[in-house]
Amino acid sequence: MYAQGLINASGDPNAAETPEQLARFQARIDAEEKIEAREWMPAAYRKTLIRQISQHAHSEIIGMQPEGNWVTRAPSLRRKASLLAKVQDEGGHGLYLYAAAETLGISREEMQDQLLSGAAKYSSIFNYPTLTWADIGAIGWLVDGAAIMNQIPLCRCSYGPYARAMVR
View 1 (tube, rainbow, N blue to C red):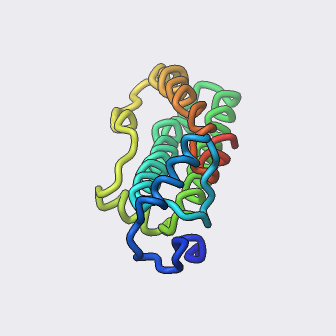
View 2: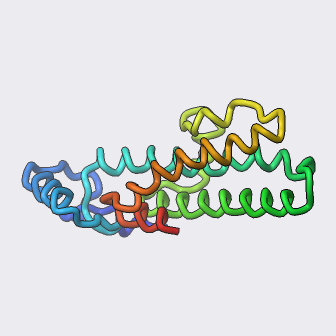
View 3: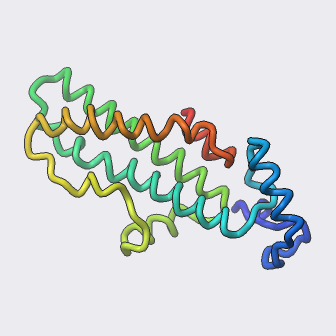
């Protein structure tokens, strides 16, 4: 779907990277320019972005589960509504991130297959059970607080689609 953005300057997606290309790319990074999906980038940069963005997207989607399990058990209608909004928000974040990763030439299905096979990872904090309502509070306070601190610098990352997804 996005293959036209995956071709390097020579037109050959498998052409070797030259030292000049790498130097120009590094100069753009050093100048804090945004790299866009249709622009040339080193294979290692693309591979790292795919891994990082897919892990981030998976963490958003998997992160819906602990809170989603508590929607029916929340102590009040107001808290149920708050949890539903939070779960929906996490799902939206995951979709934005999957879309950003797709600009790098990997499909959503491939990323999900990697997650289900164990080849891709997500934040391990979501492996711990949320046995009490207080656990939900801890997730909201500690886990989400830490995620916000990580996501603020990502708004300024070098890959344009990822940076824009983080602003949303």
